[in-house]
Image (tube, rainbow, N blue to C red; front, side):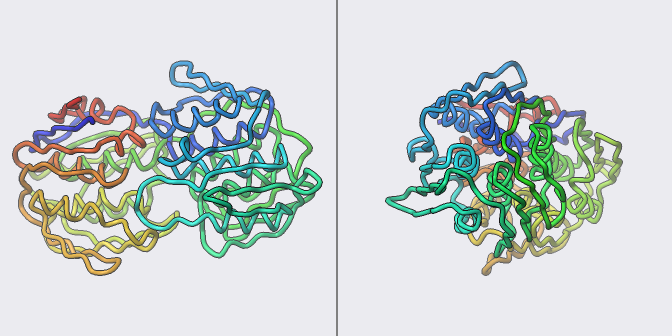
Length: 422
């Protein structure tokens, strides 16, 4: 099992290009099931989750081919509308095939998904919404078994009990081929949801309201192919910016969308970092005062456009070496503080109580062997290791490989002393 070894204490300097977003690539791949025509996804990140979903689509009969930084998909010969447990147990996003399969073929059998153990992420919103669209859905022996009497879903007005990104995406895809109009209230507003709507529209879907809490979809008889460039990974961008702030460096991230990071950029400014933004780049400078520590800044996670839960661990790592005390409150997932004990092993001073952590900044962390527990926790540990004195070994980095493309190579290009141990 691969590990990362990082010798800390080196400020990051230079430029790095953002990859395509994992959280956009996966629903876009699932959306290819809605059509028999070719779909080409440009800037497709080479990630374990992307590979896993590609294998799932192939098992159904779809063609999935990588062409450099692009993926070519075509679902004209689907033979099985099933996502078996063996192929989806490591990735929650596999549930995204449910809506497209049901909408196009009228039936689906999808295993209840797995993924990072960061808390309960129920699929009841997906099931309830599909039932409102006319599907018959049962959960049997760990599988969601769904069918559509008459073969075609019907438009409906759906109000979700909670904001759910994958739920919004699943219902939006299903509604594209439903008879009549569907309105989704309390819809997720994340940039990845907007990116999916843009590609669906390129395929011929009739969608309005992306980026707001109210989506309107008028069903069409069929969808065509499309060529789409995946939106930049705002979480990867934010991770590099937090790493630059923590190491007191100077880093420019290109090929990104700065306005997708407004909540994080505000917090980084409050920490003392200097930020400049262009149309597709953002530069963070924290090296103006050598030896100075960032200021502690409290954060509270919330749905977009609030502070992203996927940036909580990385910002906590920054607070670990900050001047002062900050609170980190997690409101999305109830079990997303598993990285705390690993940060403590590096010398951090953190007290957890319920859904809030109190982080008392220290002057320095010290290297140790730590274990990654989930995807974003892995990134937080990498940032902590970059500022720690001595050598840190991060085990179980397969979590990191699920969501960060060539992270050690990108960090090394910025001056980090990092290597993968196989």
